[in-house]
Length: 514
Image 1: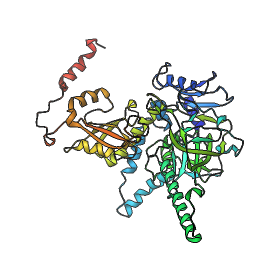
Image 2: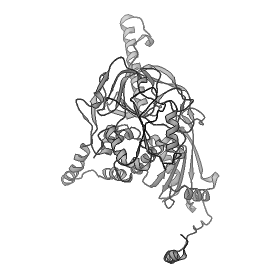
Image 3: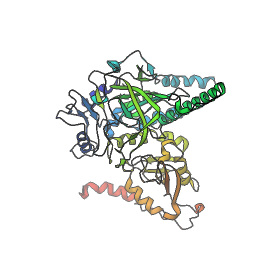
Image 4: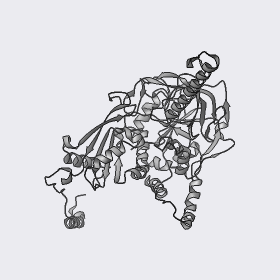
């Protein structure tokens, strides 16, 4: 049964022994980060990932609570998506993808149950919800919430786990993305949507619309008055934005998944939780937000306004540098009574976002296989911070196939940012870094098997030659074939025969070596 809201999820974490409540006073400025970083890295004696943390005594914010590290272990990611293992979600996705187009009436009838099931996942709008318990159209301040400053050189406090809702001005489809938001003052924040993100594309579409409208108006004025008027004197446009903070875990996770632009994250969340997301209309903008969210910020991004945002201690383990980004002007805040502020921190791995990234890896492997059917498995090591390293195993059936796979990955959505791709044969366990290192480094001739290309890179890549543009590397670590120009013999791997292994298995206990 799906979690109703963040509070239902918190109760589940507590029942599972996965939540630690902290009543000692702590400061949202730096101190929560240091505590959480130690816990998530196992430095506080809690094992892999540590527990979720609920801070209940916050300096400067009496009565407030902060939830962090809610997704910070493999077990909690499974709990969040209500599965025993993430492959269950992948299997559900695979089942829907395997449906073939109906050829006749009987086939169409057979598809009805699956279509009906899909229909259950679509979001539904309700008249009101808990997020409307308190409505503030004026006399509000973002600084009333215990928003963290994470690292010493951060430019200020940052909202780090927001579900940012925008609408495509052409299609009307909504998008829910997760973009950090630097708090500038009581009513404005930065909106750090990188240029390849869907929210940024909606922003550019609105900008194009406004510019085209302005040009038409100038042309019309020139025709009717015999004069001219500059575009600069025309009213600037705005883009409506809503931000939900503290949603149920499936929706928070859905905001980070690399979904196709035509598929709404509200639908993805419904699929993950097996129950539709309930939405309510905003008070001051024409957008819908989760009815059970803890906090909702409504407002606009002005199309003619950019402001310096950053630095920010990022998931690369380094500070992302100061740059210009749009400004979000808050026009209304609604929230639950005594709202719980949900947040996360990023920095040197392992951290909470690493577990979320591994969940994306597992769940979306079937979608990658649609485009790259020879894929067997992939591994995005947490130390590779999602976009720096991807290890791929393939079922190789023709020469040059490893290079074809590299180029296919670089053409796939957010995978285009992958800096280094290592391709190995299907018998290599890509989840075992030791085995990958042994076999890949044995199998390559560095000059022959390394491929370089130029293209878009992640905005957070501080080493690229230009912002958002640089080089990427692929390594073909598969066995080389004669049809690939390799004429030397390829040696066999050292393996014991099964008869001897079985014999030693039978004797093992009496050998007394355990």
